[in-house]
Image (cartoon, rainbow, N blue to C red; front, side):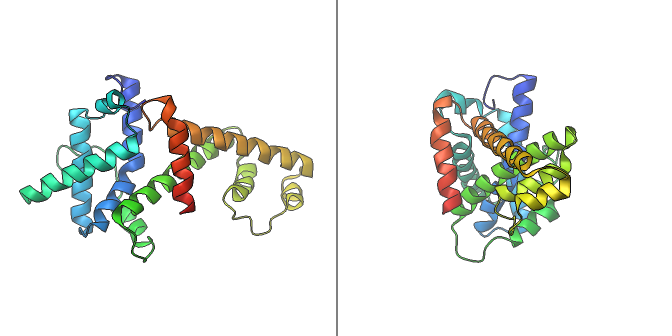
Length: 223
C-alpha cells in the first residue's frame, strides 16, 4: 500500500497511484484558472516533490485517505508556488511521471460547462478514474483468459450502455445459451465489485476507511 516504508512494492504502488490521480489533480488546477501549460507544470512539480520527499508515509501514520491527502497537499503546494510566483521548469530533471499533455487537455475540454467547483471536478474525476482502472483490470483479465469478446459485450451492462441489448442477443453472437450469459455476467459483476474494493483499499491507510470511502464514491457518482 502507498504510504508504507520504502520498498520496491511500496514504490510501485505509489507510482501507480500517482499515474491514476494525475488527471483529477490536473483538472483541479485547470479549474483554478491556470493555462494548460501552467497546469501541467504545477501538477508535475507537485508529484515530483511528493515522491522525492516521500510525504505519503504520513498518510499511514495519520490514518488519512489518499484522495483527501492529495487534494489538501496540492492546495498547499499551489499556495506556495503562487506566492513565489514561479513554477518548476517543464520537462526538468524531476519529471518522471509519464503524461500525455495533449490528451489531458482534450479530456479537460470535455468536462461539463456548468459551473462545477474545482473540488467537485476533482472528486468526480477521482471517482471516474477509479472505475476506469477497475474496467482496465477486468479487460486485461478477460482478454488474458481468451474471453475478450465476452467481456466487450458484458461490460455494456455494467455502465448502462447496453441500449436494449438482450441476453439472447449476446448468447446468439457468442454461441452460448442464455443461462450461461446470465451466469457470466453475474461473475463479472462480482469481480467488478471486488476490484472496486481493492482499488479503494489501495487509497486508504487503514482497512476501516474502506466502507466510508465506498460510500463517498457512490455519493460522488450520484451527485
